[in-house]
Length: 454
Image (cartoon, rainbow, N blue to C red):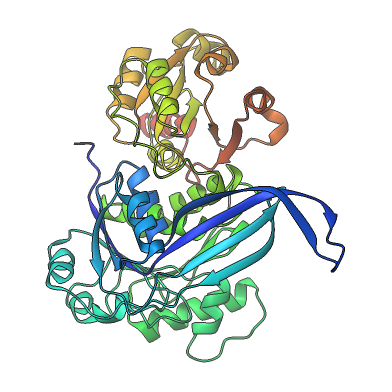
């Protein structure tokens, strides 16, 4: 057991495809780009993508969704089989498919087909929801949430990801996470169409009251998220702006927040970690950069050899994430950063400064906790798969051997302050900045402790 609570996802599954190629000329019969040498890559979409991302976090996931026996449904079943337990709801038609045509990783067109809707609930589906310790609903308006509404009303979910075509979340839901445009469209009093913080805050507060839910977090894209309990909102800014593919960022947000709520996190903590995870997800390339779902899941980590772990995950076509720091006095900011980092891939290796390295960086008297204690505490975290130690001032030599796909740093850094970023580019890796919780730091803790003894 990895200490992570299991999750049941209820919602509308889709099959997504990316058709990616080169575009170097226009068609002779129309001013449209010709996409040459394209390759096709299928992946789970809609509620199925959210479930898949939660499963990649190392969580046991059950997906209750409309899936039939048409070709798209069979393909989706194949993709999900290694990762997710599927409880299918009968469909009225073929599974919806959404295909993106991309040239040089830029969308050119989208092709949609399939109008299948969940027709009815089954006894197995009802029992899965009733027995769940944590439920996440992804309602795309294709019937799954509707046919199970009575069960969901009796047992309100932790998180509801709504869409304008779907129905309202059931009263008592702990957190609802509409995108900004969706929140403005769903607000009961016709919130102003202008997309600014005032309109988002007004709409979120109105939705908390109208729906009878505990909280609403409006996702704001590159600006982060705005969390409202019905009164004064909390703005959670994004730690960085990435101009990559944002496809799937909302699903990454929902999967992270729901998983942390299931693990016992507070709503504010879950939203902050979800903003960081979604930001890093976009920076790492979005849904299009995910490893193929039909590759075998990476084997469990033994926590002993970080290099062997990284090799195993890469062999299984997984994503290796590394994060670095001193981690002298472990605090909530560290934990939030490491949880968000783990959500970006299939294993997390923490690169920690040796005692001598910490002294050179922090001065005499540091570290407070010796290396053995710091490593032991880090290894005890469910989100940490392995720990590696470096003695230099910066971890470039360690990273060159580890070769992670994603390198995570926390705190107040700018791109120019990360010499590791250029190193990762040598093997196609990506450096990502994630925030600590505001006001949390080892130095601050020591200063407060010293003040309290005076």
